[in-house]
Length: 183
Length: 268
Image (cartoon, rainbow over all chains, first blue to last red; front, side, top):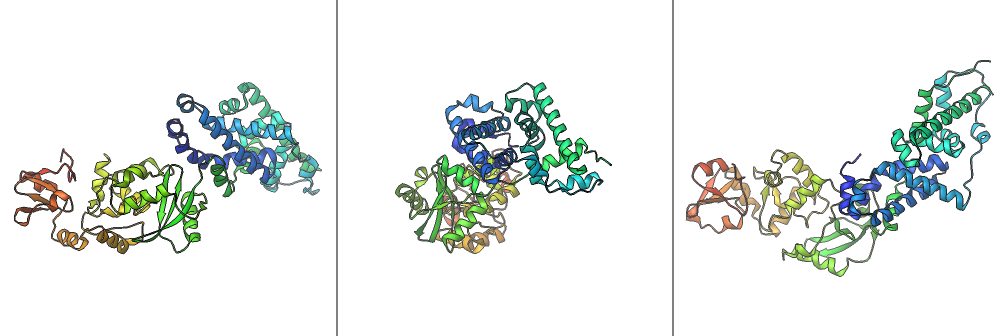
């Protein structure tokens, strides 16, 4: 990522802001898409995230901006945006049954085929249907590939808790994928 | 009944794929306009034809000749990844600044450039190029040396070939040391010659000097040597003009480099 970006933003928010958006828009949109399962919602989440980030940067002093860990910070804002949206109007959750309905009744299949058949959209639907605590931890660690330290910072939780939630979330996903296969 | 074990590795790889997406192309423009740092563009009729200008609140972003608004907008979006919004005309102060720069009236102080989307290296190249006066040219190596990056000549050439603000940031005033004019982001070597002519540079004379191996002109009264287009060199009367093939030749002949056009570093 761009190491000079925090320094540039600290010197002049507007000078660095476009580069910030360009550098992170794919990731933050991807985060919104995995958390909401909807491209339209994801674009709104991403837009709100960057607008909030801009407002915060305008408020922060140069020292605070210079020390920001931009990736974790933006993920944290995006998570809050998603939570607030759910509070305002409940986002339609995708039911596990609907996500798995595409499976047929073949009882045995090589794993590569199993995972291959779980399309990116299917995976997102499965992830979106996890309990929120597990979902957020799994998404930050394995969809967004943040380190545990970054994920913990973005979630405002201890690293141990995040690790446990990732572990449980992966367990549920594995069960779901395997179950789909033996139905 | 056989159960298929799903390994962690396969699961993690599938999760990563699920999040590897591209944001819609409209997102950047929507964000920038929501926070008030969007780009606008309009065309400006000038002595060298209609120029399309794009600007933000921070200054001029791009200048380019184009057959239509659509052509310019498409080029801009391809270059900056964000679609500009068309307006009917430049703001008055901006137009005044652009016209002053084009006319060589030293209006540069009142015209701001928004180079934020460029790399720090590209920004430095363009800032350095702004120091070349109208009616004069410098080689690519001068830009590299002035930036303190004497070996980055090629990278300087690439940055200038991608100058998004030709005409206003005078990349046409940077030419090859061998007298060839070199690439020009504002429309190729022919356009470069035209705009230099228009600014009063005798490109044909520069090429003649270069063919004879002359890179610098010295004065045998002051013992100072310059680039041929430096205003100090042009003041030297014919009987006192001494041609040099290199800074080394000039230095060995007891000449020192001009402090205005800086044809060699102090160490050279």
